[in-house]
Amino acid sequence: MSLKQIYSQDNAIDTFQRSMRLNRLSHAYIFAGIDGVGKKKTAVEWAKTLLCESPVKSEAEDGVFLDNCGECESCLLVEANSHPDIKLIYKELIRFSEKPENRKKTPIDMPKDVIDEFVVRQVANKPKKGKKVIYIIDEAERLNAASQNALLKTLEEPPPFCVIILLTNRLDKLLPTTLSRSCVVRFGSIDENIVVKKLEETGLDRAQAVYWARLTDGSIGKSLEFSKLRTKGINLYEVKKNLVKKIESLRLETALETASWLVNTSKEIAGFWSESLENINKSDISRRVNRILLSMVVSVMSDAMKLNIDRDSEITNSDQRELIEAIAKTYDIDSCIENIQKVYQSMEWIDSSVNERLIFEEMLLKFTESDNI
Ligand SMILES: [Zn+2]
Image (cartoon, protein in one colour):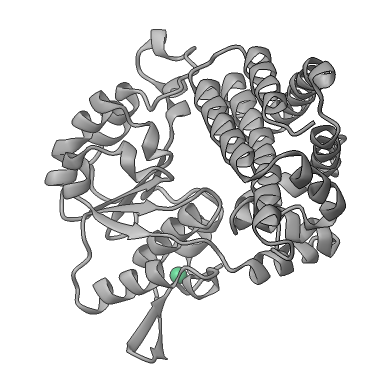
């Protein structure tokens, strides 16, 4: 992997090239964009290039393109995730806290102690191997006010050898004080064709590949993650197909049964997922699964809305077009909009830990109030 091999994130690559050319690397960056579009990968490639012992320069339209060599000791250490000058900061680091009472915690927010112990008190330490130390703070949207305030002084005046990169999918969760001290680099969605091609390379058929690319808004990371669930006992794609069928046949008398099915399916996926993802706590995983299922429901309702507006629209669930056409007959445009709003409200409740069965039941019953049957 090198900077040149990063998909469709020209803005991030250009920002880096420009600041290297002008010798104006900022001390703090915020990489903002939806999950799975390569923010972390790009941050690591930036870091790798900054630390590379013999960076490669090549001609580019607007000057020189600087990239890492991928072969020196430093590059190899980065690729093995063991370079001492790249510090990946994530909330689960709390398990390695110096305070014993912290070690058993499974935090939802980024704990202030993680920022204090692993960033603020470390930044003065000189690089061990290269000329820079790069802190990559994952899920910065989970920095609460206390953690952001703890980080402030460091963002303001880090030592000259220090670069801090915050990764986030929610720029609005960062305080103005954090934003004003950092350079924001926006990450866009990746072109659908690139995502589809990448998924097809993993053996997925086109219909599935198109579905995942559209559902995730062009996120390669998420698409790969979701589609992989097919090979490990659970088939998330089959779940989505069933879900569309169930929404099509949803009636007042089947709403509670469908809600139960959603709860059980969600538990099954979360249980399986938690076996393969070690560093993430269980409630995070189940929230994530519920959000995926709800995003599938949103896609069904917005597809139905699109078909109500224009029968020939391109839709996310193009592989089940006939069922979506039937759903579009059941729910008119206004009902679709109401239902989409309802699902978004359900997503907020999922985040605030309301009982998931209640959330699904409420949502589906609301749908049946708005149908034309
Ligand atoms: Zn190198």
